[in-house]
Length: 54
Image (cartoon, rainbow, N blue to C red; front, side, top):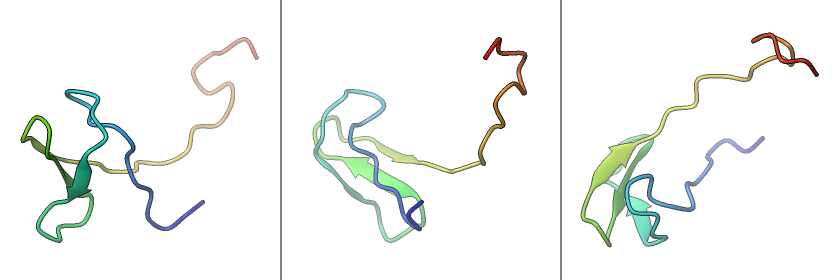
C-alpha cells in the first residue's frame, strides 16, 4: 500500500481534473465543478466481518 493514495475522479461530478487543496492532508479540489473535499482512509475490513457469505 502506498503512503499517499490519489483519487482519480471527483466524487461529485466524476471529472479527473483534481489537484491538492491548500496543502492540507487529504484535501483535494476539482477544477471542473469547483468543489473542495477531503478523503480519509479509515482502515481495512476483514473478510466475513459483515456476514458476507464468502
